[in-house]
Length: 111
Image (cartoon, rainbow, N blue to C red; front, top):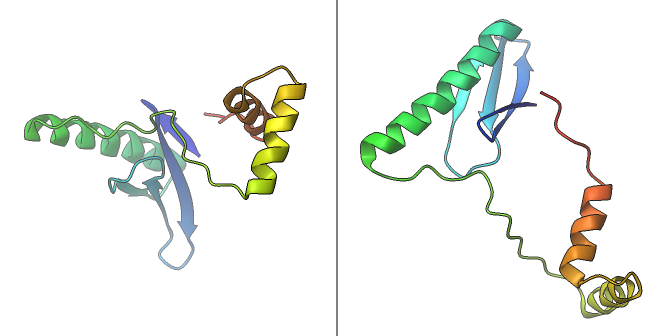
């Protein structure tokens, strides 16, 4: 994974074609890139993000932000109750408790 200006790129290697290809995964807009070396793929990723930002500017549209910080979450009523009880026991709001739990289960992105 790579990060540039808040956009996260995921890269895979195509052994048949002998190239790296990637896409930005934290936006609904399609942003792709490719290269044959690590340096090339890194540069292509940054160039693709810059091209996307320039294209949005030319259209007079704001680029899609990678994430708003809002998450719609659906739970079973039983799991919702259990989470609420656990949050209350921890002295936190349900939102803060869920954010803490998710934070404990994720690792930071290394760039």
